[in-house]
Length: 263
Image (cartoon, rainbow, N blue to C red):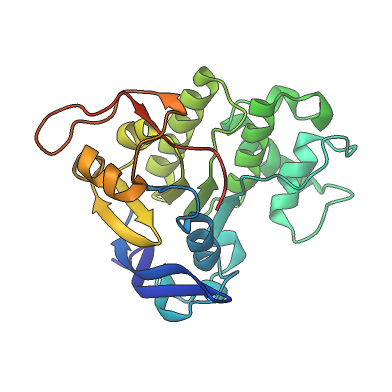
């Protein structure tokens, strides 16, 4: 079986900055969560996998091909920063239909509308398909973007901080939807997150990154106190959450620093 993502001694330099150093992994299928501190190269890795940033050394393969050779329909991508103006006079059904084209669908064809409505129905937003985007909550907008990413039924879904703007209930629902889509389609999911608990509960694989790989594997093996310390250095006090057990079965501090900045 061809791995969904194969990185072989991947290095990426942005000018004189070595953003990624000697990253190797094979991810067959499942749900891969990418974690690491601010500036760890998480966004650079996603952009390299999407073919937007070239490898400086080593190689990257997506579904057995170079990223730029992958048909656009095979990858669904939800960026963290949405470029669409909330006041843009558009409807969810139009935004989702735009995922079927390379340009904005000023008029949505019947076949596109039916596919867009099916994708909105999948994420529980069919009833708001004709409501102006400006009247949707942040969580509802995330669902619409998820529908847009799913409308072409991609084999690889890449999400950058997908829970932004969602409450806990909406977030849990979204992970349920992702898992359902993954099971039904056999697709792989690759997600940047700052939330170790999300990675622990929803991911089949975790990559802990700080420019170099710190650890890669099942969540319970990767998300140990010792590995998190190696990745994040000292623990900050931005969120009060229980730290995972360390390798000796002891809890460390109760505060850890997963900040919400971008690379």
